[in-house]
Length: 380
Image (cartoon, rainbow, N blue to C red; front, side, top):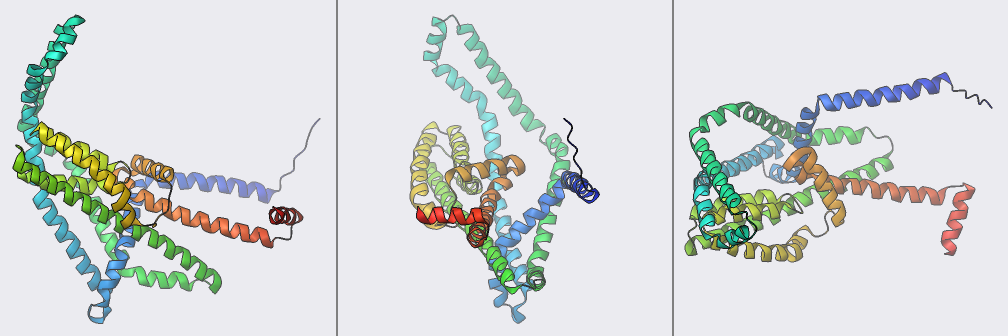
């Protein structure tokens, strides 16, 4: 039995036009991926800074938005400059110290590893254990030597990536600046394109909700990260008075906790592990005390500090947050982990609005099936 299917030429052309459009969009996204990431990052920062810039502009002569944006930029760049000046040198110092202390650390473990040797001797593996310790110590010595002798070569080899990062950062800064200045004009133009005032108000409400989600989450996460960083640095500073820990490790500890806590779910855990390792290479007792503090603090933060600050800004389940962070980190690295939750919150706002309107349309529909469904729902 043969079945003959007739397709109109117009439908056939439309189908292939859609296919070609998807292919061209894919090629465009893949070829301009880095540029699109820069634009998206600049837009994200513009959304976050829009509120503070608007408040600053009210106090400027003539309510100049350019002046408000400039002052906000000066404050942010000054903070980043002081932050880098105080934090970067101790991080390099501690990295060099860790590299130099690894051979001694391996020797100490080897000297105190009587239980390991007894267990290895019981199974006839004592020679293999000795050889493993010797290999680790020799490799650590070579690594420490190469790190101290080849810093210049490593810097030269990384110039390309460093220049690319600086160019991308400069573009983000400039694009964000112009987005902040021109935001009111663009908003006025976009909302002026609507002929239906009801539709315009509806879309304006959606945009306002998404803006509140993004700005509220970022502000709250910065506050949570700031509190965590302050207490982590303070605890490390106190430990320097009790254990053999350098006091200048407090600022790098605060910086590490602050930056990684911006990544929800597992960022703080990574920060705790890094700081514990840094402390362990100086004093194992200090590392143990810090681990105890960090576990206790995480319980307090998760149950009291974070809920009190974040309130119900995003209202996402734990599964949705973990899925969003995982996808964001794998796609865009640390930046993706930071922006993934507000993006997921915006998607949630759009989905809720779509479901609400779909339900309203279903109730108003004249279709017999919809009437039957409505009757069944009313009876139930």
